[in-house]
Length: 162
Image 1: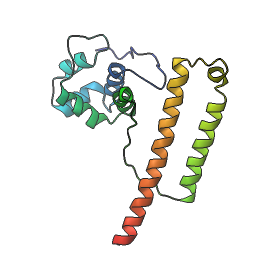
Image 2: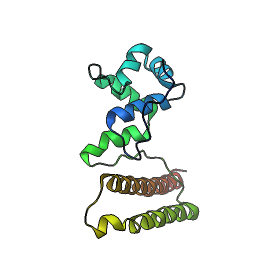
Image 3: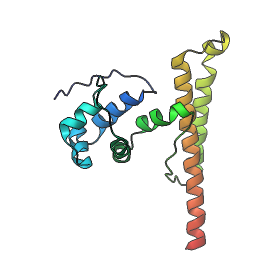
Image 4: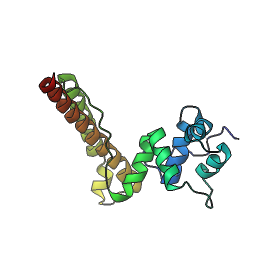
């Protein structure tokens, strides 16, 4: 088994096959540990996550297990991007002054990023990489804001129930 990473850095957006490859390799202990957690033969999983394998593919149940066990954001992005959707894992962030400032900073950085993308606006031709980065930043902002909303709701419910 090769320990060489065969996938060059593809930027913020990966195809589903590449995202599965990355999720398997990034899992704590690698694909071997993932196969053990899934109770599946290591060699079979290695082949199913291989980049150039067209004959073998994960079954729907195996795919679900890989998603559940890895919870890899790149994999989640690759799964929902074709539908034009944004995934969100409800992770409460305390709705504090600091958290709101952090969102403000994230929005500020995203705003600077968008304003510096004059090339796409000036020539009215958006390149694939420009749109991919723009979408990634937008999804990050959405997740951050939803996290604060979840934290605020949780704090309110804790107060009401406690």
